[in-house]
Length: 443
Image (cartoon, rainbow, N blue to C red; front, side, top):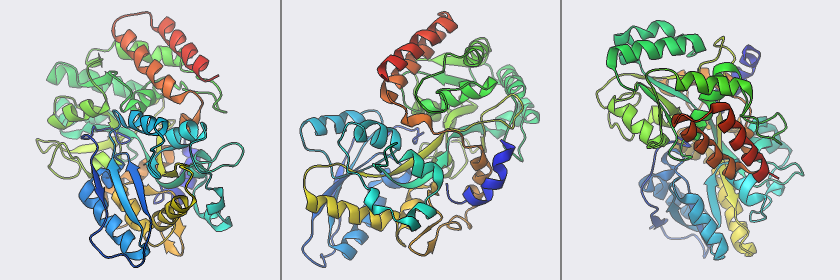
């Protein structure tokens, strides 16, 4: 991974529990008490909880400003990850889909875009845009034949969170490289042993109730011994490879690690904030910046203990491959050219103008481009110590394989496999069975 360090200077200030935490049931609001400048469209935005894009008060202010400048009203609904896909699929069936959606390429490109529901926005990207948008998000948001179903806005790297005070109490901080925020596989298991001896009970969880936060369990399993989730060209699921089987066996056989089918990523985070768990596998900068279940400020548990972010362990510590998060806007093709045009104006406003700073800071992630219409985006977090500290993880971003076919089905197969591992079923056989099922769904 050292070969990426040179790239870090370019990426550091420009990059992305999913958010992992659970959200309340969707609510809606219509932007703006300010008068329109001219008679305009009303469009609908449905947003997944991407940082504070899931917070109504914050988004209302953004929508009011947008309406004041453009005359376009925006009715917003706030989706939860637990049932957001079902709500959108139902709306598509009923031909009542929103005009805009905020989420990632695995949904907008590989799912709804591939099924023909999304508007191709390739006409919105000129040569300057293509130069300013970072290669990774641009590639993830573009199909093989050049269609752009998502306009990228923000990125982050998903990682682990650890309770540093608990590590120090157990003497496990000796196993951490706190400068690079990395650790080796050997030291990870030594730390688990020390934590379990000090505190008893599970100190971390391989949660597998559902798909929520599964980027954490995938990264943990893949990184321990260098396994992969898909092949390089994203045409086959490969999680049954021997290195992943070895990782699953090591996790299952380690005292202090629970395979817990009662938890999803958001549940794990809640237990981590409470101090019950000492390591969270479902973590990213949004959690580090805004621990909404802790209410004690950035980087603190409910008991005021210090939380620090860590890369997932790898055999030598340097080869960790972090799952990335990419989020942006897509437009559903509802057959109304005027609304599509209004939706494009919305995207231009928040993703490629001086207002992009507001969109990025609302998400609490890193911008997916270096500049927007003359506004430099590389220094927008310069005055934020937490964001600056988090940048050390950006060079460890790995392959964005979420755009593979059959993605939704594969996530079901993954957590079902983890449940079987927890129940004591043969690990190699279970991995093979569920990887084959995922590949069948991808055909």
